[in-house]
Amino acid sequence: MLAKLTGLMMLLVASAVFLYYTIWTLFIPFVDDGHPLHDLFPPRVWAIRIPVILILVGIAVVGSFLSVVMIRSGRKKAAKEKAKAAVQGKKKN
Image (cartoon, rainbow, N blue to C red; front, side):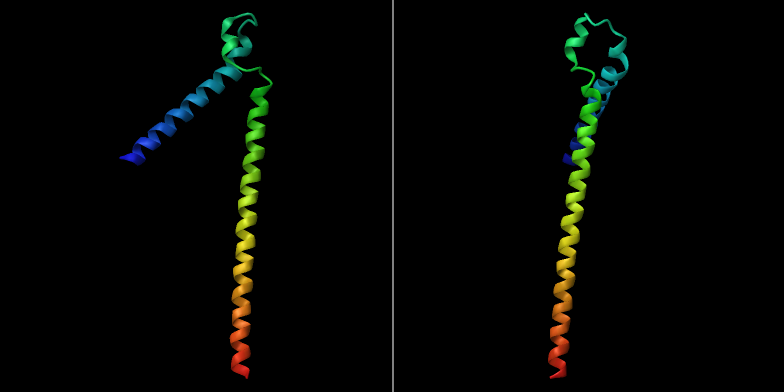
């Protein structure tokens, strides 16, 4: 039940963000500059900056995650090879 509630909340938040961003980028440019509706939205330049910043942060997070995974994988592989070499060294003696 908690998973369904969490999914519903995520869907509602995503829908609200999508609706807000769509109104901000597609409809607000056609509203007169003096209209009070402009007070509900940031300047239009942020309609580009925010997604660009989020994409850059997302790429950095994914790149960092992949780097950490590759480093840990390399360490495990090196440890296995070292252990294998130690076992083979004992067999020869």
